[in-house]
Image 1 (spheres, rainbow, N blue to C red):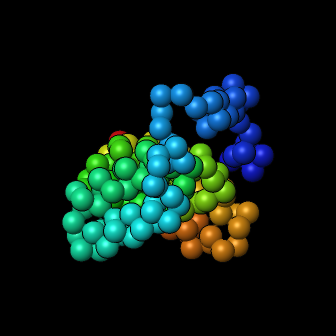
Image 2: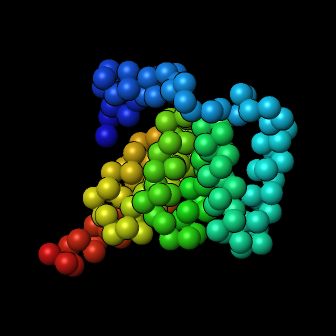
Image 3: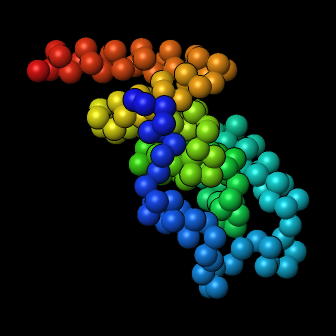
Amino acid sequence: MDDDKIFKIDESFDELLTKYFTDRDPNVVLYEKIPGISEVNLEAAYGIGYNLFQKKKYDSAYDVFHFLCLLDHFQKKYWKALALTAYVQKKYEESRMAYFTAFALDPTDIELVSAMADCSISLGEAENAKNFLEITCDMGKNYESNETLCQRAKSILDVIDELSVKNS
């Protein structure tokens, strides 16, 4: 894949993302508008969710992270936490969507693309997985610190290709 193609986004899609993240429905309540809820409160709730996750209380952790995403949908770490929690609960489609939302907030985070590939593999969607893995490899070329993720992606791509050949 050409490096230039990774970050070229159709203008209509770019406009849609901009509209999604800037045009707010007046009926949607953001945490800034709720009396008594501050960024400190949200961080405390995140800590609670993290502790619940560590104690393997995934249903409760999921609820906390989902709540945080609703209150402040511009925090990538809330979306990543929700995605990981959904993944361990085997809610792979939800997990992939949460990772995608986090990726929309930070399109340079290669780990999110790799995680979306994992979700696609878990869903049995080999073609989607291959696309995400190829993007992971392409993005990995641009960032030396992501070499391990790129190598992992190449290994998984090789396995998918081998399985495709065997099943043909």
